[in-house]
Length: 179
Image (cartoon, rainbow, N blue to C red; front, side, top):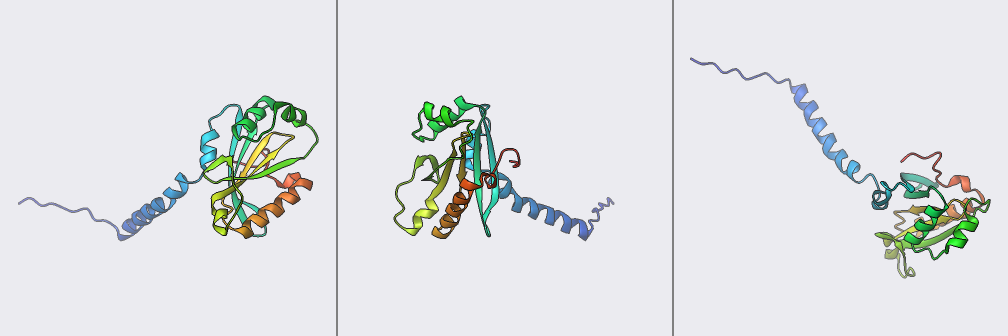
């Protein structure tokens, strides 16, 4: 007679394995979606440093996802401005790049095509389709604020921008942010 022995499995081992599997399944979407589409497009470029900052606190309890593109030098800033159709000529970019001016250019862009300017907002649903692009003249940096979603969030983001003109240190900075 042949006896087959079944291995004894501890019920705690089974629970641990089940919890581990559930954690993996729950975290997988976070790992896959943990970066913006725009960041993924620019992350391998050598002329630009791309950063993705998730849940950046901008005002009160409002947090947004941010993609920041930092050119290495003024020629890179000119190419970046051209990529995003900012309508700035090279002379303007070169004049302000590296200067003391803290000027910021802002515009609404399409959420799924941040290189295209958004049309006028006609109804509340339009806020779900926009992102906000900032261009910092003195460093050539492009900062995209994602997940605007509502008129109220848009107002708070705009209030943050007004504060950023006089206090540029509140904007994300390549020296103190980690992607």
